[in-house]
Length: 391
Image (cartoon, rainbow, N blue to C red):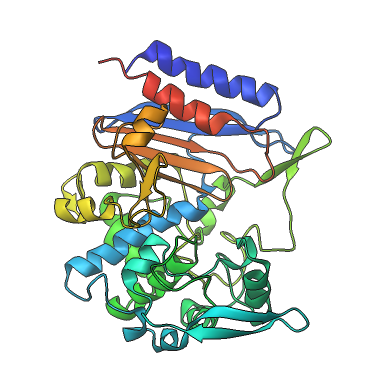
């Protein structure tokens, strides 16, 4: 890697901070198993004047999905199920799930068309189940149905569990029949419950004992221990040219450190550091192994990153595997995305990651913002990271 070219990242982030695109960020780049760039910029809390540190903890939201998928595939390797097994074999309520037919605006009631084919574990991993995503769903009728039923969409400080929430979710209408479309969904929360049922352990305990502790990911949690709470970065938004702490009635923004600490959202609930998440990605680049600990077989990692959605994204720069977007040949030609097979995703609070198996390269950019519509740092960071390859 070119140190001179990596330095462009810092200059770009500092310029973006000066222009008010973001209040600050933590950036990490690793190549061939070694961290080559890990720096903090700007203010983690502009109101308090707190500078970003490289060990700050971020709500990684949908970056949780990759970790949940790994947990599911660990149990799959043990022979507990096949990917095309119906989820109703484990959570019977899904046997009654149907596709939205009619919606009544007056009371948010609805009717459904029964399924001809069941939702499978593969559907849930690949976002082809037809399940919606409540508060962030693109269909207003689905959003209203979720709200009326009190479905927890992602994270919460309320005293609710996966065991309580997921059967209620099974009663919600689907966007389309399973396997007949790609709809970003709460399916990974369903799979968190599957892990609990199959393993006999709470989902947070499974992740800690089977993934985080073996990999040395000491700062990755659903709900932070008290001694780590002061490292959590507040979510910020911009008002009248100033960065302020974000508050909303839509969800509990400080869920990682407040409330009942009982809901383990497999789709969006974890908090972590750039370094911890780099360890997880390095395990994937190492074909399932890290520092002498093997979580997955090389062949399983190949399945995780294979196109699982057929032609749903045909002609685009990426395919979709089991909870990962994966750059294809079109993406290589597009430019700035990485080599074919590069896998990536991001999080609701403005975090992103990508990892290129061919180049053995990892990029992670952690921010905590909402409504930062002018933020161009994601694409610039990715483009600059790949442009720093000098061999």
